[in-house]
Image 1 (tube, rainbow, N blue to C red):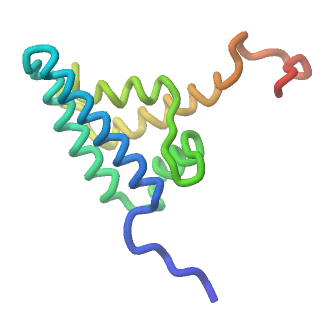
Image 2 (image 1 turned 45 degrees about the vertical axis):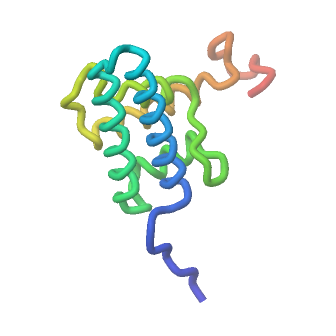
Length: 132
């Protein structure tokens, strides 16, 4: 018997959406700190919309699979620095940024973060990396 396909979003999608919403809440708090800065409010609303978009994607979406591979720990979305930084700036400076190009950007940043993980001295020649 084959396993049934999950009808709704995967747990990883929900975790990614939760991170978007949590970051949106943080941006709303920043807006209060900075005299209701419109950029913070715009980013908060955009992150809420991004969370909805992530949940609407098919679970087999290539970007979701790549983000799960690069930033996932089990079903949890646990991104590194570049992804977190960029997520918190979605539509902050560029209000016209689209959801799909932004997800592509996050995948690229996750790949860069993964490439640096634990390599504080940079990439070493083959055979010289004691952690490789």
